[in-house]
Image (cartoon, rainbow, N blue to C red; front, side, top):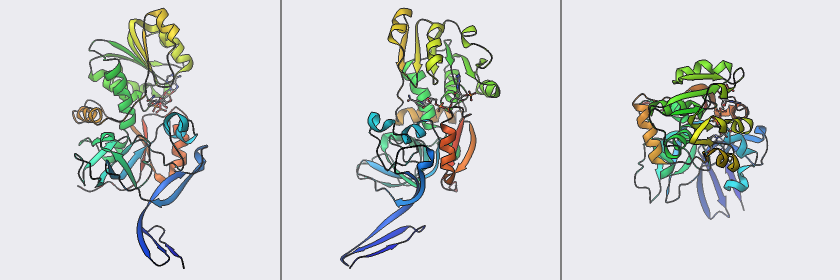
Length: 339
Ligand SMILES: NC(=O)c1ccc[n+]([C@@H]2O[C@H](COP(=O)([O-])OP(=O)(O)OC[C@H]3O[C@@H](n4cnc5c(N)ncnc54)[C@H](OP(=O)(O)O)[C@@H]3O)[C@@H](O)[C@H]2O)c1
């Protein structure tokens, strides 16, 4: 005889099978998609808490945030490209506390405050499992809301400007979308490296570009960026299409265009004697640690414009899909830990 006793909203589900085995499975709240589609396929559910493998840690998520990659993942676009699969829990940014560690975890300890980017998402839940290299110690000067606004945006900006462009003091960079999740970090990282920054955004975000440290703020709805930016050393382009096509011409010979959404045109690069890179950001403890150092030194800070409860996940995904987010939208999953 089978018995099943489900304890919704509790911590455990008790399953008795043939009266022989009793297994207590811890449960958690999560935002889950069982099919690919628009944001409203997301369901707020109780699901089994993941168990960390030997090379993983279980993190109690305090906050996560919202990225344009979330609606793209949900649409199924990354299923073939990156091997995402259903059911899926969105959330590439997390800040939380290490709850449990696998046998081969050597650096993380239970109780550590961490922030990071789980490669396959999963942050929109009470718990997520991470590899050690996907997280780092949370910046001490940030609360958990601020910390969750950092990982994917700042890693993308860091890996583009520092690892790929090797931006030097005195060089000039054009940063498109300077008010967004990536651009807002890119401006600050470029300034911290002593570069001259020209940044673009719409009229409503001109104040933010200046606040972030841009030397020149361009309102792309009124001014052609080519009229302002000439002979630059690097371009960071999170927009693509026409913006990318028009960006080749503002680079000096030997300069580099880094696009977050497309492959730069090889013929254009060759014709102009410039370099191009299609950026694919990745989690990296060393990069997250360097970013945390800059944050704690007061050189860069996240711009959090909205904090939503996890139950507002659909609205959060709809906002991410607009490509007009100012700074970051953060999802609160648990209360800020005391102390
Ligand atoms: N390849 C990778 O590894 C990687 C990593 C992260 C992100 N991405 C991609 O990069 C893109 C940006 O990500 P995000 O997190 O920064 O997005 P976001 O937070 O939505 O920000 C986009 C920003 O772009 C600005 N913008 C929109 N149209 C523009 C235009 N024509 N010219 C200049 N600025 C414009 C918006 O400002 P206004 O509202 O003022 O227009 C907004 O602040 C997304 O498509 C995302 O999927 C790729």
